[in-house]
Image (cartoon, rainbow, N blue to C red; front, side):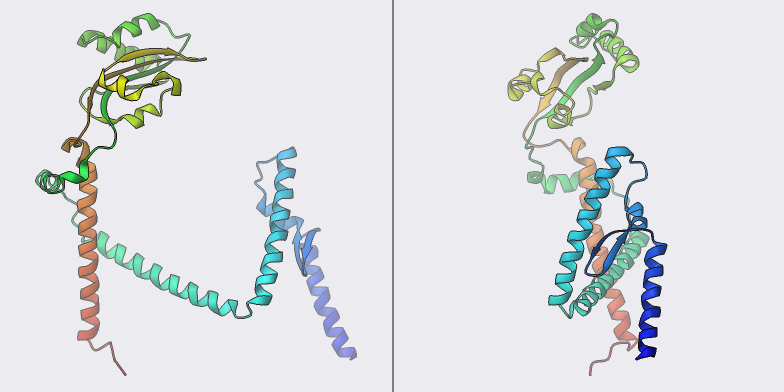
Length: 277
């Protein structure tokens, strides 16, 4: 009994030494301890003052909750470790196969997609490119309210004269916080709407279809917005080129992955590495 007591005492001293080395205990749940050292590793060192204390308090509460639930789970799921290990092994196997096949595909994939292939795909799958929003060509300028020559900008951006539009572009590149102008490329309207104050365009369809322009003054900025052209119906090929290229490459990847997997399996059978008992 004395020897047993001595062993237990030594073991307890070791645990106490470990806890002491990790610093003051701030919480304990079912014998598991959270120390100051553990907590310091969880808290962002950039936090200070009240923010740091609030974060520490939240982490302690989360740790306590986690340990209570974990203890309950371990007591009611005695075979949990085995189940978890089996799931980890399955996930590891799937992940390893995925990474291997991905590297094989990257090595053998032909990433060149010709304009002819893109055009053929577009023609064969034309119904896939039905627009659910307006495509627009537009001008958007966001500039500080104290910027110079705002009256000139208000004239330039409404003009169709190339000289005026060039003056607008040069001014915006120097003075604007945000500037978009492209009279050759299409943009989804919803993408440009994100850059506008909500109250600037109240009737989207009316504004676009009538190709309107508007100047709007916010608290700190002035906005100039104009619709140059719009499109509905089928999205044009030039707008969909990158999308179509990505689709074609994904189809190639799927076919190549199936082909490479088939070759690997056939190689294993041909070399008598598969035995059925």
